[in-house]
Image 1 (tube, rainbow, N blue to C red):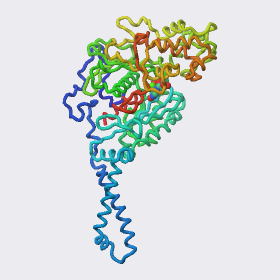
Image 2: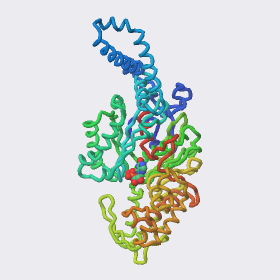
Image 3: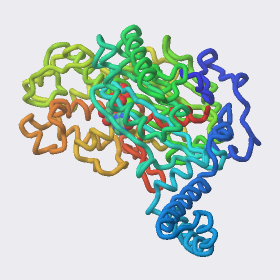
Image 4: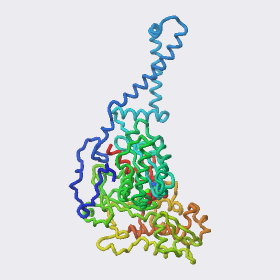
Length: 540
Ligand SMILES: O=c1[nH]cnc2c1ncn2[C@@H]1O[C@H](COP(=O)(O)OP(=O)(O)O)[C@@H](O)[C@H]1O
Ligand SMILES: [Ca+2]
């Protein structure tokens, strides 16, 4: 856990009775500047305003404009007459003043005109913040080292911790494939795969702010599954890369494997921050599901009473409830991450059930091999073809839905507590592969940031996908990527099964599939790095 994970407290030691003794008390009358913001242990806005860094940029720029103008005029007149420079200036001081005033006025108008000189105004805002003005800008650079790819997000916040645009967007977002875990035996090459992202991210942060701008690298399921030694070697190489190549600020523990619960809680903060539901009662916040390649997370706020009855986590697992203060309110966040149940990992789990023989989830006519995590799995259709019902049975088996470990509580799957439901789970924002596969299957518009669907829509699309033959794939599902085609029945059945049998949603419940969330006029990626960035800048 990052050291400045300040408003979040795992309850590992006392999972049954969530002690609040070690928590900061809710701040009821903190300085008015921070009263309505996300709260931090070290209020920071004033600290960012370091004194003496810059003089007023307004007076600077006007001075320099005047002196350039004056210099030119003086030089021209000196050619024609034999009097001293100061005499001439003195004699024509009226004329000089007359010329200077419109020049200054025109310059001011240009500077203040909206649109035409946005970059100048942005620059001004940045400089004045350094001088101690009210426009404190804080940047954060967050790498999402996901199992299937690496991404970088650069965010810029104002002093209220609202996102402000960098250029035209509210974040710089870049991604590439494959992820760090694709180089298990070559840490240097693995780290170097981030170079292009790092260079572009750093270039988007103003020069003078780079040493103050935190950079974090959070690795998720790919490195989690790689094992401690191999992943630590890769992370060490990334730390060295940052040290050698970047001027950004690396806090201790800036480069880590995120634990799944941390990833899930950042995702919850991201979505609720963008929806502006932070600070509202827990039942008005939304819950999140994030289906990655390697792991899947669910997080939603629960009541204090439910938090108090949270069961002990399974051995080796994180506690189920995290306590967080956000915008003056204390939340009890139920969060759990399931390693090996991200979409790409789940394919392997489902193929393992059929152990080297045909599998009813594979699209009719396909006979191949599925590679995941350095292993190969037979992926061959039954001679009778794919079958929705049989695939459902295999998926339920892979998910261990009726696991006997679940005795004294309501479970999702694999013996994991379901959190008890409640108002915080009423509205679910479901991200990553849920959105992507729904778009490929054709029941969601990929150009829109969100879509309202029901779990039943996944089942309906699965019925089509499980009934088709490989040869029909392109015409029936024109948006499906070729590599995904043999697995379309499997993916959609798994997604339906995960939502309904795993997470206990009703097939008819409306859920929001989310790629981006609108924030003012613009939209921001619905991904955990924003939650991490908010935490990072909160402790500045
Ligand atoms: O920032 C993002 N923007 C859009 N999609 C994302 C982002 N992060 C992850 N995804 C989606 O999640 C999928 C796989 O997740 P990832 O590679 O992060 O696996 P993991 O979370 O299990 O490590 C990607 O293919 C992509 O669809
Ligand atoms: Ca992810």
